[in-house]
Length: 400
Image (cartoon, rainbow, N blue to C red; front, side, top):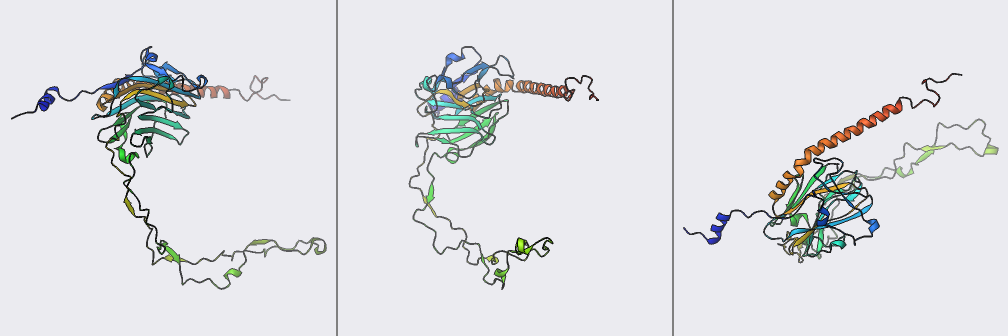
């Protein structure tokens, strides 16, 4: 039996190892040497600073992240990846954690994956990107996880057609996006899949396969009325003679009414109980009903397959960045990884996010309980003598 050289090597070497292109835990003071502030994006007065902190509640005080720290500010920060990722025969995974310690009313918390050469000091909203992914909240009804992918064929950034929900509590949550070479994707929150599907079905990478026939139109004699007036139903004689209002039969002319001075007395008008409004014939099923007319479809001449939808980094993605606006700040980012293996990203999450998760929740619950206890104490203290005047030290009302 003969084996090819490639097959033999595959058996010897085994599966191709996962590769990590970027990893950031922010656990050293040198983090700001790896990250560059977008100092030329907006005027300095409009830019906010990231604080290096574990936050108000945490699983490990020494395990820090970066947190937005100034209200009503733009935030721009980017870092060069260890190695560019180029879309090919392996999946692309981007993952990071987000914690909103504030009651976020309006602001983004998404991360961007940037292609090619990036002027990091000018990085901002107009900088081209391959992926924009993560939470975005503005108001109580607009809460979503952005999934926006760049289409080279359309030269446009495509939003996912059906919004993905997001987390909006005050605890850390892990966001993971996977783009696969089989033209599928998956979004996970806290390592639970919340959306998965085909790129061409969830995004408008291609034109629709079919369009309405521009030469077709609804026939003039097409009957699409399910009900018609009953031809046998006739309007009763005298129907239109019934007045809407009639004089009140129970009204009586006041005894002190003087026709000479007050004019001829007329009783007030009331609704006529016999009035039935405009007459309408009864409805019956239309025997000639043809149903709702459907526009015939034809093949779209502008449609073409796109086997490169997943190649959002076809020319190489080189940087990750945060380009945000927040009204009320306090969002903390941590544990970022860009890799070509979901398994590798999940392993990293076990070593970071999930290792801290329970302790953070315990500390948060303790802080919240202490706040509730303090509020209750203030209420009780306020009610102990709040109704008494300054001179009523004995608590009794003075008598005179």
